[in-house]
Length: 527
Image (cartoon, rainbow, N blue to C red; front, side, top):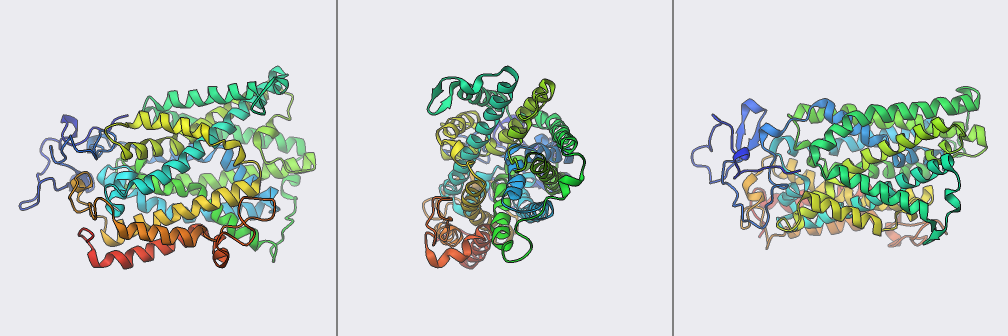
């Protein structure tokens, strides 16, 4: 995928578009009221030889911003209906919540995370820029690599997790169909047949993303309804096995609503927020293709909280049903589907796992690091090369370890990730909405020595805010004995009380600190 930018014929303003206002500096953005205030750069505003430019990072021309409300809603349906998000909800049941507690926790988290999603997404339709370019406004042209690489690292890890889960699903379900797969000779502690499924699944994902964003959009459009049907089929199956709907709703909470509930609720809530806090940063990677603000606002509002809540209902009902049928909650939908002996059912589950996992992994975990890595070295890395690097790194992080238990998956992995990404989100939103009032000098986002050059390409104030907010958010990270990698008293013991609120602490601290530090230099470069 290439987003042809200013300086190329397709990136030029359309015939009859207004020029720069009189007295404006060269390369000033050209807002077009007839196009909802979306900004187009004049031809030649950005030197094509600049080391901070390539076709994938330049603004998407206005006439190529075509994604509609349905496209964004379908994107979220396709991303939300996947095995790791199923594990979120079913994992809460496995931790002791009943279905009401689990669904309320997830619904609240997704309403909260929708706000930063819409705020950072605003820059996409208006300017046509991806996340790492938006980050240049706050962190500087070089400093933007800091949040971009953090986001890319998280996405690479998520890509590995999703690919491992997808390959594992293929392995389990095909093993049930053909038999004997689990008894195959082992390599690295795992059957070679499992590694084969993992590699084939990995190759399929990269083959799709290699064809670009338009192919991804079409894939998401049909994948979304298919995955919903698959989840409903699993619900019907477990309902029949349980003898009706009653047993799905009757499984009690082992936590109650008292003192035992709240120590689980708050870190779980932050974990649920952290699950999509990744997309709350790089959502401009998608909204840059939007036909307007209405498309991204309505599409995301209709797609994210409603879909995640519905999927949470499905997953907790199915998990509660598995507890009624098998005597213990089966929180992994692949393991649950494998309990059937019906070949057609197994093959249908296999296709559903494939579609669901590919759908979310490509959109959520390949697009972002592809742009982020391109931002690191625009002349050496384009979108497709960044996607390939993501695929390789995702294999190297040994993703099977991060989903070993609900505690490790929700509290350790998601908790730490959420704290760091919440800090970055606070900085981005403070800069774009409070300091800049949504007004960016578009050409300067690509030009050294412009207003976003700061000190040698780094906004040292933003870096200081990130360090302070990150320490507050994750410095108190702790684990129960034998349940995780952190000390029981926390990495920094006096910060331990903040650890359960990592995303909120990082977001709020960064937003306030950034405004306080940047208000004196609003609109200019850092000195």
